[in-house]
Picture 1 (cartoon, rainbow, N blue to C red):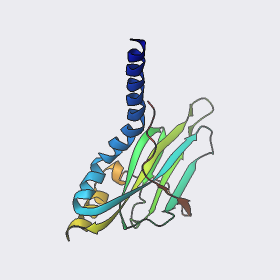
Picture 2 (picture 1 turned 45 degrees about the horizontal axis):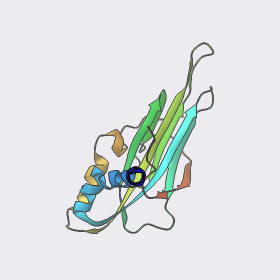
Picture 3 (picture 1 turned 45 degrees about the vertical axis):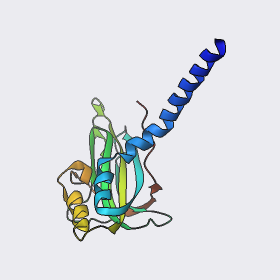
Picture 4 (picture 1 turned 180 degrees about the vertical axis):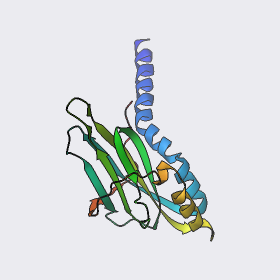
Length: 183
């Protein structure tokens, strides 16, 4: 009786532990953008870049324009860059610079505003997801990438607020999906 109870508890613990490890991967495999791109391409490779800045003092603004570099080079061509906002407070902006080319360059700014009496902090936390695609299944496949990137949404990088840095900083992409957020 005791061994049967212990065996049931061990099985339940194994199921919970498995769900912790498989859950995030399964959720990301069900990503809507990745699923849509897989309908039009043979293979989609996902990379990401985290952004996490808090500005709490005057004259401590963060203004960055980045070019992301994937090493080793990913298979396929860059199809779509998605901006997944996790937390944004205060005065912040992100996305593609208006009028600039839509390649791997994008920017963000986190600005501190206020006075000695009214100290307003700003915070920006997001993941920038890069979708590289290879093996188009039809001639219209590349049009899907252009349509997704041109969408008038913040996720497509089209909710920009300046200012923008003229200096482009190179940073390294991380292969795969970002780690699942804890609640």
